[in-house]
Amino acid sequence: MSFTKKHLDAVEAAIARGEKTVRYTDRTVEYRTVDELLAARAEIRSSLARDAGPRSRVVRLYHGGKGL
Image 1 (cartoon, rainbow, N blue to C red):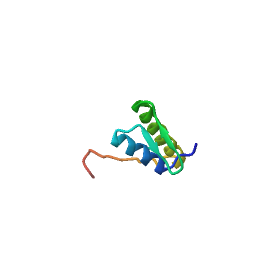
Image 2: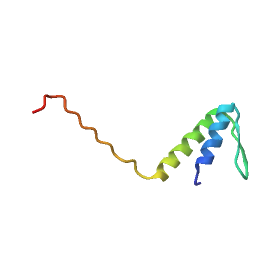
Image 3: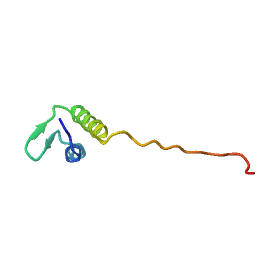
Image 4: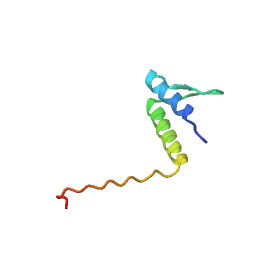
């Protein structure tokens, strides 16, 4: 399934409210435990990260010696 930011927002809102029911635009999902809800959030986050493509690499240079 292709997740969107709205799916993630709905799951995080349910976690913040302490509910196990998540309402999307066209359906309602009721999770059995909070652990399942947290696992769903992790799955949505990883899916969104995968779809975003590769992360850019940052290289930091440090010189601790004396200059010329």
